[in-house]
Image (cartoon, rainbow, N blue to C red; front, top):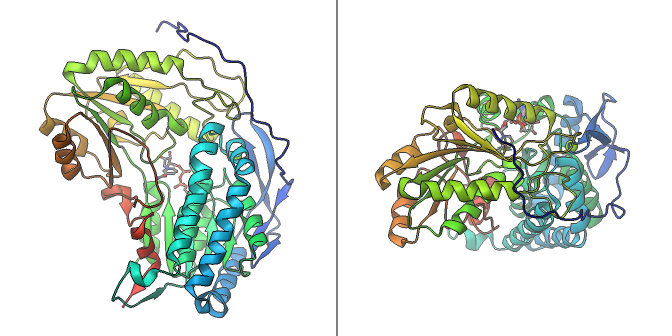
Length: 484
Ligand code: NAI
Ligand code: MG
């Protein structure tokens, strides 16, 4: 394929400063309000995926540490948190929200350094939403009787929460804020490639004066996660991550009485009708799949374009892809940052290879990429068959599978023909088409003439292999309560 750089301008680098950020050499576990060393004495590296440099050591929690964290959470639940009024719980959550806002810049820089996402996103999307979720759920803490009128309910007790690496602090906020508002205590584990911002959050939580043991953070990989899932004194598990691990968790807790919510993968259809505002739709496509390097469970990874506007959409899309700036996540001009880890880059490269071997026509940006670090150029596969691996499996990278359609019934059938059901997008000028589609799509979220928009007041979650249960909004309170 011809490599021609069609980018029409060059921007001078505009790196965000890092001088205000404080990173310790080593982070211990946060248990019972204290930072404690792991029982096994082991630590692992947290890496900056844009430079491959080590940022700090992170404690590796084993079964003993998880047990200690669960005991602390149980004690805090029994003695303090379950006895506190909703109004007082709310005060702590508001305080956490305000502290996050005050330190938004530091959190944004750390999120970009540790996870590879562009500073523009961590600064304008992730961290403001983190604060917004804490503010939103703080407001519910003393109003649960209004949320569920005439129903009797109580907290579960201790919640075990396991989160992924694509929106590290935001996924922590989605899980911690409603759990606290409803009166549960917490043992949470971040993903092994992105532990830094949650350790910073632990420092902030300590500073907020939240009673000891209400929130405990254990760091580590799958084994640490499994120790949480299997711990007999955990009442509720909330997991976001791969469908594969979601299934393991579901099996492992079967019959234990533990409550479960799963937010798993996706293979969302983004559907462009001929009457759509095409320029706006192209921005929506770009936002849907290249946003956060495609590390988004609701990414618009399958594009369906109505045949009559196919050429126009693809030409504009190719042009737009060429203008995307791929590189230093800390540069304010960057559109596409680093792939989160070497492992994830290998996964994406595997799909690129198989997609090419299948004989699909493809187009990749001709942008240059840095020598060090984990990078993937924005890539389109055109005229992809419904049976192609590219249209079926979650790639979790900046890779878009494009298909065409003629009629609305055809596109609904094709779009729903997937194991997943997390999200979808529709672009059209006609309100009736939007309503038709939103009612027929088997997806938890359907965006109309926009994509990847989030708000703490709207619930989020999937159907089928995308999991079950809702996070966000009033619905997000329910999984943390047991009803009589
Ligand atoms: P993963 O599902 O292994 O990791 C998610 C979290 O689960 C991490 O905190 C991990 O340490 C933990 N975990 C791993 N094994 C566990 C176990 N047996 N018991 C309890 N916790 C466990 O996902 P991974 O390997 O990082 O990514 C693989 C694929 O999963 C990606 O390529 C992507 O397709 C998908 N994914 C989906 C996400 C989503 O938001 N729905 C987020 C991250 C990945
Ligand atoms: Mg990292």
